[in-house]
Amino acid sequence: MREPSVKQENRQILRDYEPTADEAKFLRDGSGVFFPAKAVSRFPEKALQSSETQGFAKWLRVNNPAVAVQVEKAPMLALHSNDYWFPLAVLGSDTAAQFYIGMVVNYVYDRLKGALKHDTHLVHLAAIYEDKPSGKVKKFIYTGPVEGLKACMKKIDLNEFLGD
Image 1 (spheres, rainbow, N blue to C red):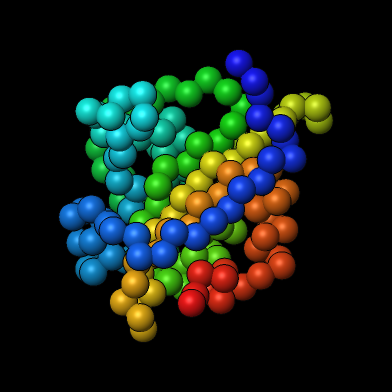
Image 2: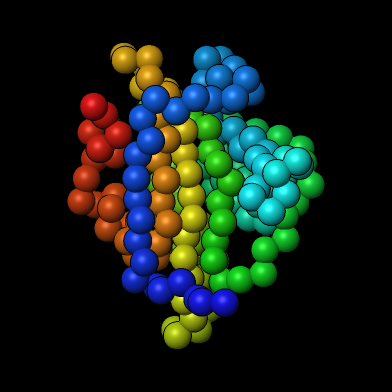
C-alpha cells in the first residue's frame, strides 16, 4: 500500500451541500459543534464515529467550555495510523468556521508535543455550516499536513473563502 505524501494538500469547497435530517436540524436550531456519525466506504451500512471523535470532543469541552459540543452516539471506527481523522463537524454558526479550524490546529499541536520529528502526520477534516444570509449549506474539506491547515488559516479569511 502506498503511503500518502506529507506534502499532499487538498482543500475544496462543496457548495449547495445537502445535509441529512440531523444535520439540518442542528444547523437550524443548534449552536456550537455537532459530530454526527457517518457511514464510511468500507462499512456503508453502518454509521460510525472516527477514532479521534471522543478525544477531540473532550479536549474541546476542557479547553473551550463556552462551546457546546454534541456527539452522536455510535460505534467507533478504529484507525491505526499517524493521521488525524476528525469527524464531520456541523457548525452552529458561520462565524465558527475559522474558530473551529483554529481549535483543530491547537488540538493536533497538543497531540504532537511528544512526537518524533521524522514522524509524518496528515489531518483529514470536514466542516459543514449554513451561510445565514444566503441560506446555503456549505462544506469545507481539508486533507494535508497540519502546517498547511495553519497556513491556510493565516492566508485567508475563511468566511470570505467559504462565501460566494
